[in-house]
Length: 111
Length: 111
DNA sequence: ATCGATTGCGCAATAC
DNA sequence: GGTATTGCGCAATCGA
Image 1 (cartoon, chains in turn orange, green, purple, cyan):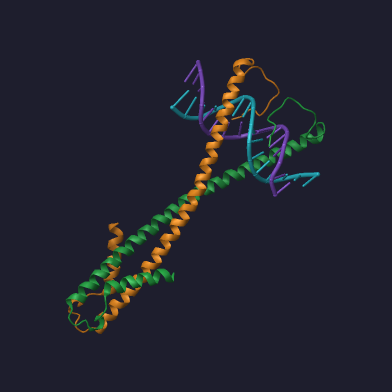
Image 2 (cartoon, rainbow over the protein chains, first blue to last red):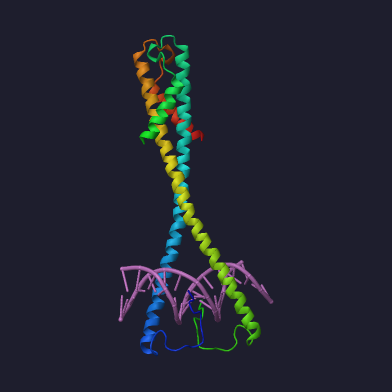
């Protein structure tokens, strides 16, 4: 839609002559200011949000690394013990590797 | 700084009379449009970035949950086995709970 | 039909 | 000596 960018001086399309008109313009100008301040605030908040999320992300990645290492260590320990210990009747027939994978899947789909 | 909002018609402060002036204005108007398009693009990208980060975040949280559950399961399994199996010479003198905690700390500070 | 809110646009000052 | 950015006002439009 054509927003009429500054024509010459057309007739009193908007207001009447100058009384109500001026008040109207002033009120609108204030509204415009409010609106723009608001808009800038929102933009700023969005930028801030990006930083917050980046930080949370970093923390979570560190957590995942830590947990992954812990888990790797435990799995190794577990498997080592299982293969060294002949008396592992409790785990007979158990494929530990698979068991752990299944556990993973179960947790995931359970979430 | 006062940006002179729409005064009457002062002298030719900006351009000379009307030849160069018009060209200058037209060029500036184009520049303004470019600048504003650019600005809006950047804002939009920031909004998109928030969504990307939110998604990554969700994935990472799920990962942490899964890993935590796996780890909990393994620890339990480990402890259960340790206490049920008399022939746990390999683990004699090992405080598993503490071992796991130490492992955690090590991984964390190692990161 | 009446208000404020939002938006495209142009101007002028200024930042670069 | 130009473009880019920004505050501001106008008018059209949206929205309630």
